[in-house]
Length: 398
Image 1 (cartoon, rainbow, N blue to C red):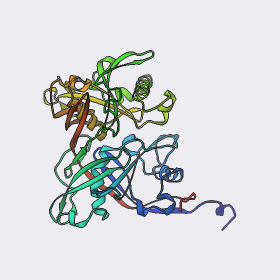
Image 2: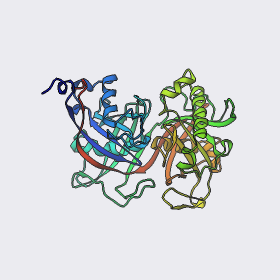
Image 3: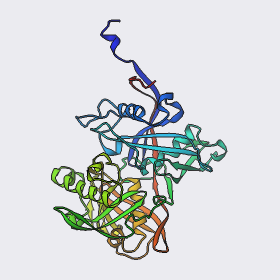
Image 4: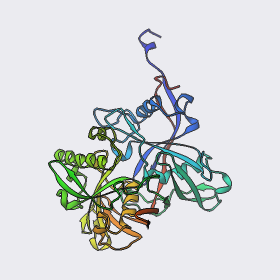
């Protein structure tokens, strides 16, 4: 070997599974399969995960990694036997920045949650006595990022996870088996679900004005604003927003000021390094539009339309955690979301997003002067795309 060749590290091989969950996909790891140095959180593990996904990439393509160059496909999941009583698996989620050396651990991915139960069963993280030969396995998940319980109902045939089926999910091309997911007590622990104490607020954004918003921390911290107030109809597709740089800057400015008012950051500049949370979504009453697939969404079949921003761009469908926020906010009279639905008390809504529609359920109750979220639910699907091992240059990881 020449002196020049000896300067370069060999490839490190680590067991991994590439999975789709809902309208997202990511690289899943069993914590025990990671090299010992990477089993604890920290910069070394973050650097390893960045390399796995192919970030940071100034070309924004993630060609030299497993990422798909969108917020929906630049994700990492680490699972382990649960350390929590009466839970099966601990679920840690990392949203990997595409163009910056940053992994955001501040929130959950609701879409990938649908794949957690399947991975946990297949990798023996769930006690075998809980997995029926034929039926539905109830997997109790501890979401370590937000410290909440999620229950996934995973179909099983002949003792194995059933992945194929006829359940269709808008935003996913092919049908698969339905996985019902329940987010228990989805509001942030130890604080008001509405950080300001109000179901609606006036958010003052310089050069934009005063905006009527609902800021809620259920599923994921989310800022809801009326679409018309910021110049939208709520029926926009990705190109309508993402190809307009000035609009993206304006939306990010609203998100940053909302994050400040929600108490998630202390200074506006911190929003830049906290792209995953809070989310910004704009809502409008139901109307007819053509989804990105070319499918017609009839306004009479839905309760409202919602568009949500993820990592600085309009999401192609809807983040699962934002869907939890939509479900919860729709159940509470007076919120921006509830008003877009037509008001009143409701426990289920059907909303339109860029790829089609989604039905979500939410329950909330008022205790004293505060609203409490009981649970939110939705159906997703999940599937293993590839399993084996990822390889990255061993830059001190092993």
